[in-house]
Amino acid sequence: MNDPNGLVFLDGEYHLFYQYYPDSAVWGPMHWGHAVSNDLLHWKHLPVALYPDSLGYIFSGSAVVDTGNTTGFGSRENPAMVAIFTSHDAVLEKKGSKLFQNQSIAYSTDKGRTWIKFKGNPVLRNPGISDFRDPKLFWNKQYSKWELIMAVFDRVHIYSSPDMKNWKFESEFGTTAGAHGGVWECPDLFPLKVEGSGENRWVMLVSINPGGPNRGSATQYFTGKFDGHKFIPDETVAKWVDWGRDNYAGVTWSNIPDDDGRRIFIGWMSNWQYATVVPTEVWRGASTIPRELELKNESGHYILTSKPVRELTDLRRKGDTASVKNLIIKGERVISAGRVDIMQSEIIAGFDFSDSRTDTIGLILENELNEQLIIGYSPLKKQLYVDRRKSGRSDFSKDFASVITGPYNAGKSLSLHIYIDVSSVELFVDDYSLVMTSLVFPSKKFSGVRMFSSGGETLLTKALFYGIDRTWSQ
Ligand code: FRU
Image (cartoon, rainbow, N blue to C red; front, side, top):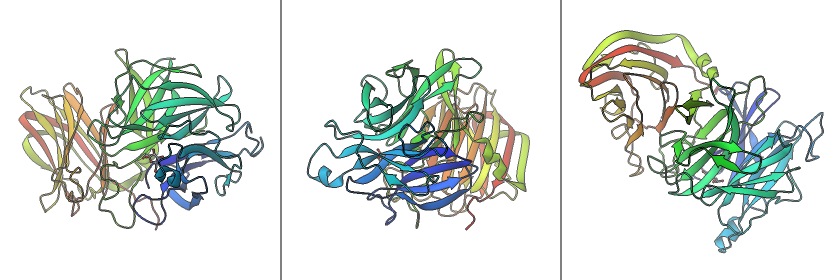
C-alpha cells in the first residue's frame, strides 16, 4: 500500500481505502484497497473497491457520506457513500500530454461493499497542469456546499460544488507559503477547536515530496481562516505534522459523529526515497497508528498535536508489563523490560535533567548483534533525535541509515511515549507537539533496553513497558 484514501465513518464502521496494486509489492497500476474496523485497531480486509478503468489508474482521493443526497445517488434514508479520486491516465502521460490527471467520482449504497462509477466522469477536468490530483472533499456546514482541496503542482486549489458533479474554482494557496522542495500532494482542510478556548481555527495539511525536514517525503501544516472561498494562513512558515521520515500522505476521517467529535488522522508509514525497496516480504507498506489531532495556542502560535487514539490502550496485554521508577542515570544503565516483547510494545519514559552538564539523554534498544536504535534528546542543542544508522538492515537504500532530528525545547524534563511494532517506531513527545515516525529493520529482535545520560546525571522518573496485543487474527 501507499497513501490512505477515502477515510470515512458510517454506521459504526471506520473505512480505510488505500493506494494498492494487487499484483505486486512494488507500486504499479493503482486500485483502491479496502479495510474496515469498528475500533480503529482490528481491521478486516474487504475486496478491492475501485479498479482502474478507461480513464486510468485510481489515484488518491477521499470519501464522504452524502447525508443530504445532493448527488441523487442514494436517498435520505440510505445515503450513498461517495468517493472522489484522481483518474490517472498513464497512456496520455506517456504521450507527453499534460492532461492525464482528472477527478472522478464513484458511489456505494451498501456501506462501501460495491461501487458504481459515475457515468459523467471525470467531474473535474484537468486545466492543463500535469500535477493535478488528490481531492479531499468535505461538507461546509456554514455555506451548505461541498468543498474540495486538491494538490496542484506545488500549491493547492480549492473548489466548491452543490452536487459533487459540477465544480467551481474558488482559490489557490501556497505559492508564497510553506516548503517548496518538491510537489505538494494529498492535502486536507478542516476546522479544529483551539484547546482551552471557544475559538475555532482551520487546519490545512499538505504532504510534500521531496522536501521534508529530514529529506524525502513529509507532511506540513498551516493554520488559518477559511471563509468558504479562500484560506488565509496565520503564518507562512512550514510546520511539520511529524518530523520522522516515515509518515506521508496522511489525511483525516470524514463523518466522525458529532458526539465523538475527534479529528482522526492516519498516514502512510514510508518515504518515497526507499518505499519500493524496504526489506519486507509478501507485503510492503503500512499505516501509522491512528492519531487524534488537536490544536493548541502557544504564545500566539497555533500548534498541531498528534496523540495516539485512546483505543490503543485496550491493546495493552494484561499482566505483561514492567516498570521502574526514580533511577539515577549516569553514563548508561540497563533497564529490564521484564517479559515484555520490545518489538511489540508501548514504552513510556520520563526524564528529569536538572544537571546543567547533561548534553544528551535517552534510550537505546538493542540486540545481540550490536544493532541499536537510539532515541535521544539533547538539552544542549534543543533537539530530539532518532538514530537508526546502526539499527539493522539499511543496504537496500543509501538514503535509509540516518540520524533524524527535530527542534524541541523540553526545559528540564521530558516524557517519551513510544509504540513499537516489529519494523516501526512511533515516538511522541511530552504533550504530543513533536512526533517522529521511523521504520527500522533489525536483523534480530531488539530485546535489551539501556537508558543513557551523558555529560551529567539524569533522573529517570519512570519507565513503563507494556506488551501490546496482535491485532490480526490470522
Ligand atoms: C502520494 C501519491 C499521490 C498519488 C498517489 C499515487 O504518495 O504520489 O499524489 O495520488 O501517491 O499512488
